[in-house]
Image (tube, rainbow, N blue to C red; front, side):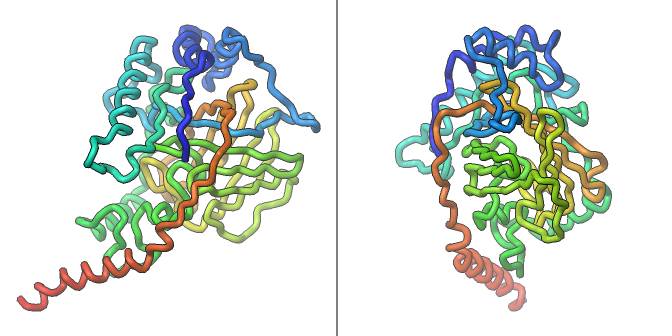
Length: 348
């Protein structure tokens, strides 16, 4: 968790000055726009390479953005913003961030509000959502069976605080945010990674045979073998990942999740098949793309793209452990609440 000022000439050109070329010339990934902006800023567009010839993905990457994961309802049917709309959107985002960070004296407000680190700039292509498929920019509908399970859970948790255990539940019944509460996986760490309120940074370490993905949120490190070995059968919190190169794009295939991971807007699926793609666009830009598929949960697969910017600052440890240390109190409080709620019923 840290604060960084990311208002550089490069960023301004990427978001504002270079956007006039996007709709006419950018690919669906915005690569040509990013390269043109970097060139105008005097930055090299050459993709750095490792000693063994592969694109160098290493370093700290900042994936803050004001672009939402899903397209807002008021922008339905609108894939891109105009330059004027983008500027106004970024202005409102900056005002919101300033308001969040400046909590009035004597009013603690949201416990972590002062360290919110949302982005103020939209993704380089001026997209209205990070989701690029389906074309409506929205997470697909749940299957009937998944919707039934979701409705049943919502009913079981009706009237409860977000992080309270489901009545009678234990450590596995803390609701959709249970892994976050226990400091096992965070809402921006995934996998897949997606921008959130804070800790929107990842550091990549790379050898010819392995990739290490260190997310700032919860400080988790995922090791991805690149040597062609098959998937194992052991379910893990962050899944079982295997990587391969497709040209200059590193593809990471992940299955066997131990539990559903969490994103900003929704709980994901324990049974999902996750495919992530890492492509070094230029010296300053990494394009991260992920596709999620689980026909038992969603009616169709869905894909999102998250442009990441190179950061020269280090990642400091985010030592999240409060949830596990306070588990006894969380559960004791839940049992006390349940006992109090049962009392009047027994006297009637």
